[in-house]
Length: 216
Image 1 (cartoon, rainbow, N blue to C red):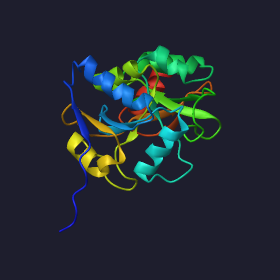
Image 2 (image 1 turned 180 degrees about the vertical axis):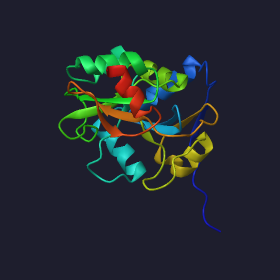
Image 3 (image 1 turned 60 degrees about the horizontal axis):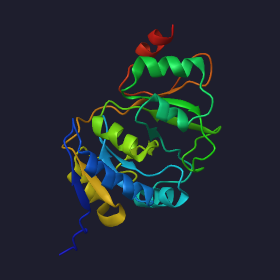
C-alpha cells in the first residue's frame, strides 16, 4: 500500500467571525517564515510573508511553481494594501473604492521591501481586499498583506475545502485554516491600474464591462 501523506495542523474557525486567538496562532506561523492555507472568496489559497525570501522559497517549493511567475497579495483593507504598493494612480483609487472588498485585484507598483519573486514584470504587484472575512482577518492579524496563490501543486486543481488543501501538501505547509468549504467559481479579475485607463490582465469574477462602467 502507498504510504499516507502526513497530516498538516488544522486550525478551525467560524467563516463569519473567526476566533482572534486562532488567527494569532496562524499569524505567528507566518511571522516565523511558515506557510498557511486559508479560505478566500472562491477557493483555498496559500499565505506566506511576501517580504521574507525564505518563506517565499517554501511557498514556491511547496507548490512546485515554475520560476518567473508573480504572486498576488491579499490585504485586510485599503490602508494595508497601500503598504505593499508604490504610488497609487487616481484610477487605482477609484477601482479600490468601487470593488473592494471583492474579487478584483489591482496591478500597481510594488513596495521595495517585497521579495523579488512576488513582484511581476515592471516592478508590479496585484493586490486586493477580499470579501472573505477569514482572509481579511488573517492579513489584519499578521499586520501586512499576505500571498494569495491557490493552495494546489502547480498544474493540479485548486481546492475548495481545507481537507483537500491539507491533503495536497501534507507537512510541506505548516497549517490549514478550516472555515468550511469555499464556493468555488471564477478567480479574481486582475486589472492593471497604473495608467489613466484600466487594462484587463485576467478575466474573472468581476465582469470587464463593470470595470469599464466604474471608470467611465
